[in-house]
Length: 311
Ligand code: 3HC
Image (cartoon, rainbow, N blue to C red; front, top):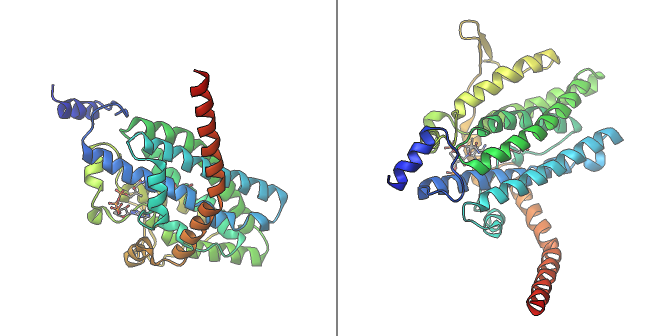
């Protein structure tokens, strides 16, 4: 049986494609594109939250946020390692990010203006990432699917700690209620954009679904998220910033107004409120970590010479 037919048969039988299996170059490159962007999102995603670690309102909140940011670093490393199984080096991926050639999630190009934003990132953004990543547990590429199982467990903690922050503020004094509603007003629409452009304008979805890399489309995932999160917002007394929002009794789904896709494309082209700062911060962090990488390489080289001498 030809390699292509064997590959297609595995996909049809829901068998995982493993690194050593034959796969079409296009499948490999699609996964490298999607997974490296996912890893970049985890790493850049630490920046908006890191901005509030020193200003968390209590030791308990600081510890929760610290744990979450450390988790995101681990998710990034984990997904970079996964992506390396496809034949690209971590250095290449990091160079692509630092040169501004790689994408990461639109959502991390917005500022975190108040503590309520940290609650929104946990509850809304990680909640959206959860919907997406729960779907990716069933992706056809073995290493990515297995990584998602572990990452989803941690993402659930992120979502819960964010939900608690938002609920606490929503039940707080009027100033806190205003602060959290303002944060929802700013994060609601960019979070809906996280799921990607409408299916009608998504160049990759059809192909990714044929290969069972994606098991649900962008619009399906967005709808799952909306149906889940709007009742939670209402339960906390929050108002969704969408005058056209309506619940369709017949379908049992919430229907939203128009998403500003011009904003989405502008942000992912690099023209969002914080794109420049995010990349500059990553470049500085990478530069200041150079001596650690060089010391580790020198040590590894010395170890290798000693082993060669000993053998
Ligand atoms: N942010 C930035 N770029 C996006 C985007 C987003 N939210 N959604 C789509 N795009 C880009 C795509 O990368 C593609 O551009 P490219 O061809 O240059 O790569 C273009 O817009 C067209 O979009 P498509 O819908 O056709 O692209 P995909 O089929 O790849 O779907 C996706 C986009 C839904 C993000 C999909 O790639 C995906 O599921 N990726 C894996 C999950 C992921 O990356 N999640 C990041 C969320 S943040 C996070 O997880 C951190 C957590 O701790 C909060």
